[in-house]
Length: 328
Image 1: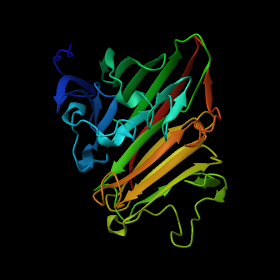
Image 2 (image 1 turned 30 degrees about the vertical axis):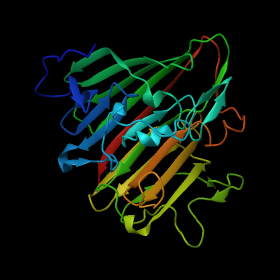
Image 3 (image 1 turned 90 degrees about the horizontal axis):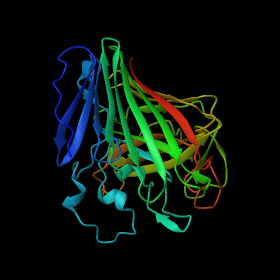
Image 4 (image 1 turned 90 degrees about the vertical axis):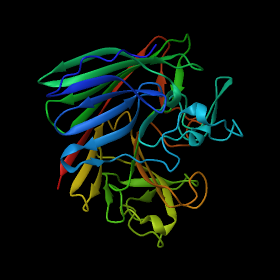
């Protein structure tokens, strides 16, 4: 049952509900600085994060658009179905991330289960001090309940995502958990660069040898620099040794920085993905995307049987992520 359209506030921090995009149900959080769309039907994914003073949407938009999952039937269900339905933007990986894994006698696909799980509205709060949208969901193949709150404070350009994940099962379960904000043009261009207080990184697909951040192979040089889409290049590295949970994507072209903070003790890895017009699947040179992803482990840890976070039976864990837009 779709959420009824509420009588919206027309000033100050506010929540707008009852809207759809290509068959998906959406809610919006908005104040004087930010407009944030949340896809309730699909994993509480954020397809739109607009910094209003610049009229700039920071999120990546895939070439095929934000299609409903019923608009296409995958030709092979075991090969990364996430990419068949990639909606860009900011999504969440849980209880696995990276490659498909065997999970306690079952199979979880690429980037886990939560990204395709529908949420329902549990609570809405609005005042002059801010607004908050609380959602709840239960995963299907695994026994988890996720309570998730999106919050804007006053008229600040700051979004806080707070979560509580509960293991409803009768056994302790290991998870690989991460946030996956994916940025795109025009915010991302060849003048942009990444900042993170990391000491070292692992490079996919090797994943065995730590290298000092931010020095890449001779052909790449400084890994902080973002390459042009015409470079037809990309990278996937896993930063760690973080002094604190913090990452920044700086756009000199738009005089704007996206900054995110989190608990580095629980999320000690920052996955750094770049697709600067790579010619293979899924976009064959049409994609231009960059993701900065706080995670509890590296991409192959779970597949190799290395626990990254254990949630005991009946217990819960909490996490919070704070994202800000800061003008240069």
